[in-house]
Amino acid sequence: MLDYVKGKIEELTPTDIVVDCNGIGFHAQISLQTYSALEHASETKLYLHHVLREDEELFYGFSNKDERELFRLLISVSGVGVGTARVMLSSLSCDEVRDAIISENVNRIKGVKGIGLKTAQRLVLELKDKVVKGEGTAVGNALFTAPNDSVSEEAIAALVMLGFTKANVNKVVQAILKEQPTASVETIIKLSLKKL
Image (tube, rainbow, N blue to C red; front, side, top):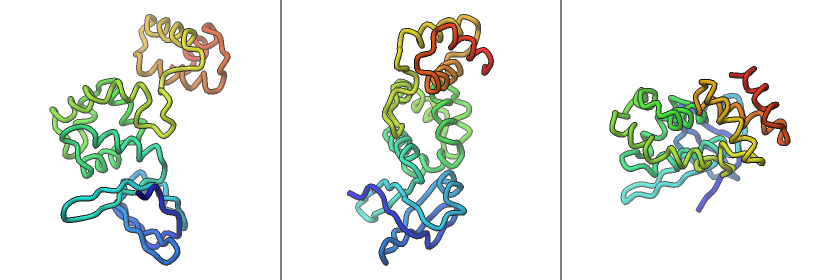
């Protein structure tokens, strides 16, 4: 199975790309996220998702592994096909999709063309725990776990008690711990209050 193709961009539109790899043109369908990332590039390393059907063979291309993994997670939900997932990733960034799922923002998901209320609810129901655990990300690490779990949990609990939403708190605490992995609970809370 093909994982990626690297080469010169021969054609690029908001929906499709053709990459020339040693004289062979690979055609893939893309999202607007990928289009924006490659718009001014002349070469690319395009990560692929292969779809083989009875009557056709398709490639979906992504400018990074993160978007591809989220795409794969989205299509794992019953009722969400490759077309819907691509529209979703064209309408929202990867972080916006994850935030909407974690915060159970059904209206935001429903705002994507082709996604109705039931599908939006199913996405939240089936993917919330997976997204929190880090599935659908290129790294595969949990989004909201820190090297020192007890410190991060204590800081998160304190900030939630102060009235901040857990989704926002998790995001901020994770960002702080990336910069300062050994930060104390007090430091995390002080820095978080500045960012929230």
